[in-house]
Image (cartoon, rainbow, N blue to C red; front, side, top):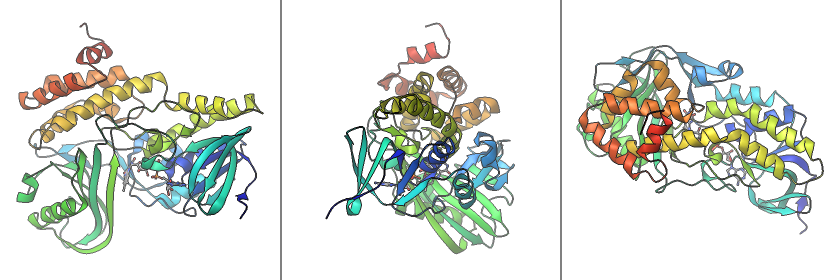
Length: 415
Ligand SMILES: Cc1cc2nc3c(=O)[nH]c(=O)nc-3n(C[C@H](O)[C@H](O)[C@H](O)COP(=O)(O)OP(=O)(O)OC[C@H]3O[C@@H](n4cnc5c(N)ncnc54)[C@H](O)[C@@H]3O)c2cc1C
């Protein structure tokens, strides 16, 4: 049977998550012809997305389902109020808003392979579909279909098991959002990996509660996290009485900045997951206009050629040298986190959240430069106790790409 060939477009975006959809919207809004290919029709993104309100572009703040100003961390001291508003995204509103920005084609299908042919790219889909485009964007998520994201030492995963449920007694303070609760009310929580509770009061007797392993290699399994969550809730005297939905989270955190190639990547496929928090969505929404500007200008400059210039321009906008340097510092932080055991991790975060809010928020922000990140890391190192300092020092020395000398240099210290 002859392949089902579709007319060529400027850009073919593979993936229907928040990354691919945000970039498709911005490219189409600039007048490019865009085809977005995903195995499903447009549908609200299935995961529970949280973000610091201040990291969301202004228009996306309007897509928040709920915003908490009472945001808490428990790391040993009674409670640390974070004082930064935190948002739960309304994924249906987010999709609607993005889709309302411009017109582009959404094609249901699964991209299987891509090759350069003649003056453009040919992408083959399942069931023999064929699509042509000048530029391809791989926004296929953590599995990264075309782009090659590398994870030094192997992928270190964030895993979490969560439920939306009704409770007779509130599992966390009503009206609050708990970003991290490292307390261990049940014996199960005092063994194995250190995991914490991430929770949101959704109104009335509904709460989202999630047992989370921030980053680990190997990572705790779904069953283990489920057991831990239920044990925690039982030990608190707050078992769920009706579970509405479950969520399983598992994705790699320690991506290196990918080498630019002829296929542009975006979102998780471009290694843009924040290596310390695991956040990506706010950054993808914020970056899309700049990347779309760069790609559009390059495609307009060279009407006839392959989209190589556009891919290069997109990579440069997404991963400029200063972001690459910042990623190396963040990966040093990942090495440190992986080196901390269950008794020291909460101490590390206590010191971290005791820093002035502008410092820890900057450390978690996707756009912070390497020097500021390095200064914050050194400040944590200086202020934390000896139990945490030793593994931090070991991580710095073991890191393949950033020596402690380079870290100090990035922080502007004499070495
Ligand atoms: C359960 C969960 C909760 C998370 N919570 C948060 C959070 O609170 N805040 C935050 O910032 N980040 C969070 N993350 C991390 C990250 O931001 C998300 O994984 C985010 O969905 C990544 O967006 P994306 O668009 O890059 O990829 P994805 O959302 O993974 O989308 C990938 C898309 O590509 C499609 N696809 C895959 N293969 C193909 C193919 N061959 N052809 C065509 N399409 C294909 C998929 O069907 C999907 O539509 C979470 C991750 C998970 C898994």
